[in-house]
Image 1 (cartoon, helix red, strand yellow):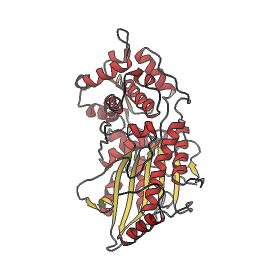
Image 2 (tube, one colour):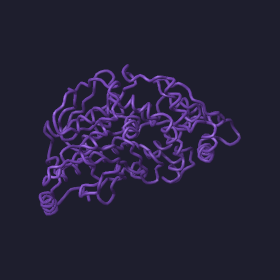
Image 3 (cartoon, rainbow, N blue to C red):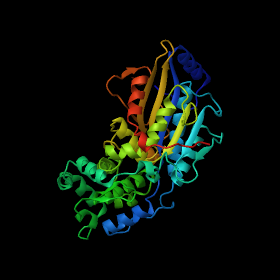
Image 4 (tube, rainbow, N blue to C red):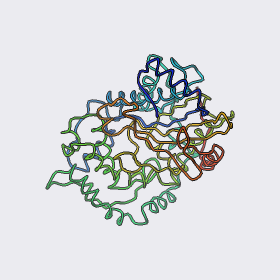
Length: 417
């Protein structure tokens, strides 16, 4: 069990003695983080207001940018992750050296600020640098990469297949979830255009498909979740229709359906997730390789929910945490790859898991520790076994799986400073 917080000298001696007696060595951690809490983007806000025919509450933070509350939630996450890394023996106390950690963020403000918060939480007072590419970053923004372009006909066919072949049937099957969200955001007796729309596949601006009707409902659900997570007044969360985390969770299933038909479509994930998975795979290799990230013990890549969705689709990793609907990717969550070595046999293993703060932990800025840990689910495909560090998968087998999932025709060279 992980232990966090300020440790007494006696407790530290016990932990060090336990680590010395264990045959397990954590050699490497690679994680992909979603940015923390933000307001709706300008485009989201306009679409939600048009779709519900009403004004949505204004936020004090600029559209799409990290809030002060979201920054602190990311600090909490970083502190927990840093203490866990030190407890395992992978990192020493104090400020990290150049071989210890490398943090890179997508160029947007919310990802850069989240990365800074993670660094502050994990290494307080150390001013660990956050690296950001100039211009677009192919790690996180592969929609700008010509090699990762999508064939619109294949996108349409794959999206329709993901919907079960008929969007009308899917929309009808989800009528209870739709009605629940409609009751929370629409005014009785007044027009609510999005909920009157028949779902249709439309080409999206970045090459992916967009589902007319569902897209705006998913944005509404996400904005409700973000307002709750930011500790906005209850009157400004779903227009006062929620009173608890369970109430919020009940409005989120359409987010999952939107993932199913966009980021989680295998063809789209294969093309758009290739660069990131290629770099994760190379970072996890125990030997040096060309066009790889810096060979630090802890590699932190801060991006977006889309990036995590692509990777989990390529892995075949399905999760459900707490009262979140299946596959949810909350703010300040992370997909983690750990490389472990059994020092007695010399064998290596990979442990993969997804970790997130609960709705209440985010809203209340709950300090994360052994008594209040984040939610977590491990990847456990066939051939993996529960060992002392967790669910461990044979290194060679899992690396073969990762490399096979990379579409090399959609990759490119990634520059690191």
